[in-house]
Structures are given as structure tokens and as C-alpha cells.
Image 1 (tube, rainbow, N blue to C red):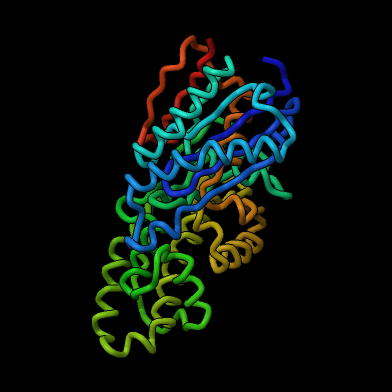
Image 2 (image 1 turned 90 degrees about the horizontal axis):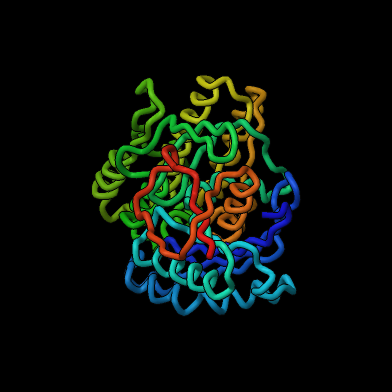
Length: 354
């Protein structure tokens, strides 16, 4: 394939439909030309969480109009697209199948290659779209939905797992704790907003595995402690809710910050990348910035628009993998999805081409 490629990326792993177009330019970071996103938050709020079947059906309705919008923004035609990329996993099986099916059908119609991308690799590489992109190697803190992981990243496609959540992830701890406090879906952002008016030291909540000697995470016990404290407060909960939210957030953030610093010390690296939805949390950013500055460590984040699931990170990851030579051509457009898929053992992706 030639050096400059137009890569169309489709994200449909959960409750956001994202489409984007990037252009690879030599050995530099691919350039984002356009992107569009539709969030299903309003639809799922009535149920207090994501309903997989509803999510899948909504992706079907949104993906093609979003694709047309992206192409119009970039003033390009579909015939100019060189590669169609999609999220292969992890995620909700039905939702993944929508993106995979549309991507492969579109690529087949155009006679162009199609590339399945790891959702977490998209998050991990998303800070390369920012005004202050990182450089390899670095330690990555991935805090996206049901995943909390620390990775050693030497280059594109070279990821070593240092630690991960053994039960609830940080994002789940935010959302489940918020639900216990009666906050609306999605709970994490509502909890963080409520915490602004609270005292983070008001309640003594556990910091699970903080002194475990390893880099794994566990937040299920914290959720239980929040439930216990809420029951103890009883009618007083309403007046103390901000304090409980602030104390919950403080516990989660302290664990994330200290584990990240431990990973940096163990690897000897001086650069940290934070990616995923929880990476937008203001307290996490401020405490990581302060701690990293004290230790002479550079920290990088995605732009706020790219912290949640989006098509730009999928198109970017596909472009970077193609530039790195991590793609194998194969005839045909058969595909599968991987609802559970470890980033650390990811193999070079197959690019199907007729």
C-alpha cells in the first residue's frame, strides 16, 4: 500500500456510534480529517444502564448517516477511502457485529481492505490526536468503562500488561457508587460534579489493593463500603450526598494515581499516557499532574472529546498499525468479533482485501 492512506474508522462497541476519517502521511501521526459521534445516553437513561439489544439496533440506524456526515465534512467521496476500519472487540457482541458488518459490506462494495481494531488500543493511542502527543515508550493507564489496566507501551502493537482490575474497574466503581446514591445514568460524571461541593475526607473509605505490592486494581470492596455508608446515613444521606460522592471519588483517584506512579517507578519510564472515559475526571488529572511534575514525569491525555468511545481513535489506531506494518492481507470479507479480547496478547491484524 502507498504511504498516504485515507482510513475510515467505525466504532460501535457499546453505547456510542462513532465514525471518523484520518489520513496517514508518511511516518508521522495520522491526521484527523473529520469525525462524528452519536451517544445513546438519553435512550438508556430510562433503564439505568445500557440495554444491549437497544444499543445494537440504534447503531444500525446511526452508522450510515454518520458516515455520510464524515465524508461530507472532509469533502471526500467513499471511493477515495483506502481502508475501512472497525472495532472488533472487546465490547457488546451485538453492537460489535453492527460495526463489523457495515464495515465489511462497505469495503466489499468499494473493493477496499477492511481492518479490525482493538477497542482499548484505540483508547491507548487516542492521545496522539491531542495538541501534545506522547512519544514511545510510555506507561499507559487505561480507564475505560469496565477496564482498568496499566500497560507498558514500547511501540505500536507492543503492549505488556502490568496490572489490571480483578473485579470492578474504576469506571464501574464510579457508576455503581453513583447509582447507590440515587444519581442518574451515567453515574460517573454526575458523581464527579456532585463531589465538587463535598469534602473528600468526610468519610473513611477503603483504598483496595493500595499496598498489595502489585499493580492490580480492585474496586468491588469500595462499592460495598459506599453502600454500607449510605445505609448508615439513612435519611441523612440527602444532606451528606456531596461528601459521600467526594470521598468516593477521592478513594478511586488515590488508588489510580499511586498505582500509576508505582508502574512508572518499576519500569523506569518517564512518560505516562492516560486514556479512557475516566481520564476526563478533573480530580484525577489534577492529582496526576501534580504527582508527575514532582517526579519529573510527562503526562499526556486525550482531548476531552476523545476520552469517551469515538471513531477517531479507531481510525487512528488502524492508520498507525498500517504504518507500523502490523497488517496481513487476506482475500475475502469474512469477519468475527471478540467481545472479550486481551490487548496484551493481540496479534497483528488481518486486512481483508479482494
